[in-house]
Image (cartoon, rainbow, N blue to C red; front, side):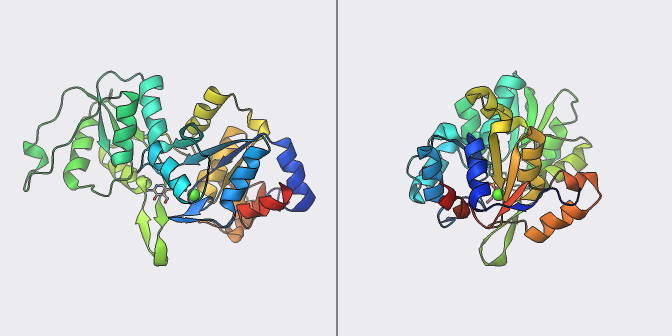
Length: 302
Ligand code: PLP
Ligand code: CA
């Protein structure tokens, strides 16, 4: 078992792999860009893959923005021809899930940013438009809506106690669906700072509600199902390229897609090797098949 995975991809092996695979799934932050900085060579890699006739998709757990603003970001960072249908975010897929899978009748109570609101609106899913917080208001005296049938929790930089309390009250109803955009624990920012991720908010609400949320983003398979059902992708002909073992690599493994860890983001080669050498089955499923320093390593093979 210990020799499985973490294989360095270079030269002829990379060429062979890219010949075999028709579809490349990229995580965004830590793979394609770091914040507002594109990974060196990433625009050329995406461009060349498309020129070679590969399908390319971007699978991000970042729920803060709607897909149209990712289209703008790709353009701003020098990616010339990325279109909205190639971008799957955890907020977009949450909206699709509520509309097409849950077939929600009623409203969603949202803890989240604009990205979630815009995607829900676009999908025609109704949600509670929370009024501005009244100073001094408590959960005992704030009204609750009777037609809330789901709670969706994601990254919210304006989270407050009252929102958490309201969500908790709605979740007392066992028929109220409980969804989380993703479980990402934290994200790196510039200068060594970090921000808590959606997962930290979901955990707070899960504790209060004594229920577990259904997760939409990676590593749940739902985002891949969205791609597979719309574009007919065969997992055996796809690769998933990501920077986080517990998110991207586990996602690929769960979907039956070969995985590539790139070292431009959160997880390190040492962590991947420690997982490979560990006997714990929950670690073994987070071991990447392949490792590259950066997706720029793909260029010579293209
Ligand atoms: N969620 C938030 C709020 C983020 O800021 C980030 C990364 O910056 C992510 C999720 C992770 O995004 P990705 O899945 O593209 O790495
Ligand atoms: Ca990432």
